[in-house]
Length: 368
Image (cartoon, rainbow, N blue to C red; front, side, top):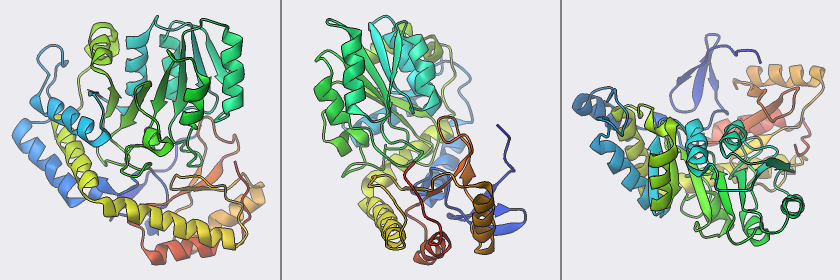
């Protein structure tokens, strides 16, 4: 992979790119809480009152009260029994897998799952089987291959960042044995999906009894860090068995304080989610009317199928002429040649949305 040019985000929906101020339809700060005044104020207050770093593991002298406060806030927002805060979203799946190592006969992994889930599966100390992404029949076939009496865990994204699609969790739970678990990386779904933003499980209308939901605090909540939402028994397993959790320094207290403010802001302001989904519906309706073949996905993401190099270059130039940063990405699990992926936020203006749809109308997209 090639390292991209640096980008400086300015305002809430723009970036500075090669000296130009361009509309920004990328990243995963879906509500732009990373620049929300209350979240910024909480970060500054945390720095003033708590200092920058605890400089110790939580199991030695680094268990600052803000971490328990943030975990309580997460439990309240997600209606979860327990939450374990970790240093980053990527680490959540690795820590959970270390805690669960030796508990399963097979791990079944969505073949387009986030790389952190593929890495996490290695810690589970059991055979790993991939199944076709978001395909309940493929999962059923994988379950059958494992044989009767198998103890299974399924690893999947909740919302897939490539196209905004959601895993069919309800179908998975019907297929799986009653003692199977789902490890759901809901980095992109948390705060976004579901009536109250509780993520993919709420979107699917399922109980979290057989689900371990991992979330990041760096996307919808505008801060940093990650959390594992599960049972008190899982928390104890993490303390007992996860070397990664035991041996790591937690996120800086100012960022934990900012994350808590992000959770409270999103929890208190249902209008943010309404505005996000309204913006997404507006853009997708306009593009469908223009002939773009967009699938019905719940996430705030508009992907275009890979195009020939000449067409790709043409769209790149058209976006720049319109004052829009071209979000052309190459990412593990996505098309090898790269593709355009546009991410809508709650804070984009109607003028920005109209400008985007006008540029995209000549381009016919196909589902990824």
